[in-house]
Length: 72
Image (cartoon, rainbow, N blue to C red; front, side):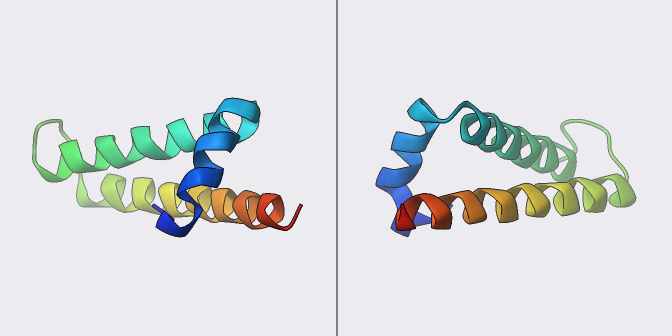
């Protein structure tokens, strides 16, 4: 995710608790979605879609934080 910000992500994960929490939440949602799609854990198509939408919202927030930190 966001390879152009790799170094900044590493720094923010250690310096910004809010960013780190969002980053972890994004990764957890990604894993839940993968597990549901692989039928490792149960989930309907609607549940998977909802999780994907939630993940996208978090990704948008992370991107906003990254852009703001890159300017600062």
